[in-house]
Amino acid sequence: MGKVMVAIAATVALSGCVSSPRQLTATSAGDVAAELAQLESLAARGDANAEYRLGLRYSDGNGVPKDVVKALALYRASAAQGNADGENALGVSYYLGEGVPKDWDQAIALYRQAAAQGNAKGEHNLGANYLFGNGVPRDSTEAAKWLMLSAAQGYAPAEFRLGWMYDEGVGFERSDALALKWYRTAVAHGDREAENNLGLMYADGRGVPRNVVQAIALYRRAAQKGNVDAMNNLASIYFHGDQEQPKDYEQAFLWYGKSVALGDAQGLNGLGVMYEEGRGVAKDVQHAVALYRLAAAQGYGEAQSNLGRVYEYGVGVPRDYAQAFGWYAAGARQGDGNAENGLGAMFANGEGVAKDKVTAERLFRAAAANGEHGGLLNIAEMYFDGVNHPSDMAAGYALAYVVAAMNDAPPDAADVRDSMRKRLNLMQLARSRDLIERMHQQDPLAVLDAATGK
Image 1 (cartoon, rainbow, N blue to C red):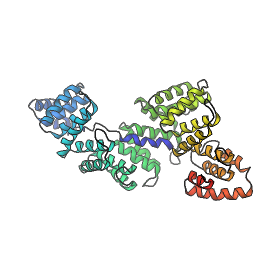
Image 2: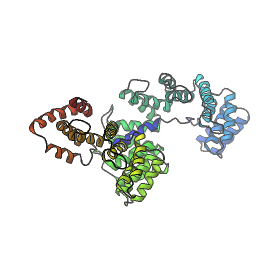
Image 3: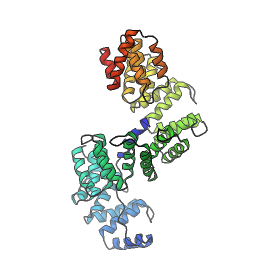
């Protein structure tokens, strides 16, 4: 899966969080029209709860034509009577700018009113805004307080966010055990974001034995509820395969396609890779480039890196170093390791830019820090050949050896390693074995730097 897992961050985006109302008897009997008539009658008599619930109908276009202006009026009427759900829903309208100019200050004030009455949705929305610093100063302690109050009432989005905070170490000390606890609680309440993130923990074996089959089951549940990150995670597992799951390009194409139907950049990029490589679909490089462009236009770093690569090597487009440089630079600004490595190689080789080995190494190091093993391999070659540093062939070889053994190693890593080894004498080989052992136990670059006196 590799970098696809980074999609976890997207699952913490703030949602409106206006939950569906408790169903009336008429709906339970399947008579939607009767329920609607009942709500309208009660709302006309000033029933605050009915005003809120009818507002939801108009906000969602559920049984009535979607009308955010009517929804807003009903929320106002409900909130004016002190109904906490109405206050929260009106806050969401101000937060999103639905039927009214966007006003985060007003949204926060309304969330506070709802939360002061113990409204779980208001508590969650207030906590989420403190978590991300939207309309209030970012304050993870205040966020945790409100989210805990909401989660204590069994509100799944708050349970999910607490799981995320423990997962990422935001506001709390990072804890796989507590992340699992809250994700599982949210999953039990049907939260699709929690299903996706719990799937990630099973796929990575964090806090639980690694179980890709369980991860797939959780991704599928979340994806079927419309979670786009889960769609991409499913597609990636099927595309790359795993010891527990053989490659299945048909399923990969299906789930990337569902993601693309929602306009998701990661799905567009993933589908582009399938078309470029002809995996499970007829090879169509022009279509792949078009998909990369759509994803890159959304600022997706991996797609920007792919555009840099196709322009650098003339894949489906005329070779154009200026375009390659521009797209690599765009991807590097997003922190994409592939883009940083590609840009570094252009500086190292003087392709479309003046040679600058120092800048090249800085970019290779950034790429390595972002998980791109090609950056590590390029650094190994620099130390081996004495570029920017006195030559240290044993240290360069040791790093290349470790890179070649990594998952997702660059395709040429083994060849680079073997070519280096042929040039080492016995003393250098002995020193490299010690460095290799240490690199397996510690950060390889830190060992390299310590060994070479950087």
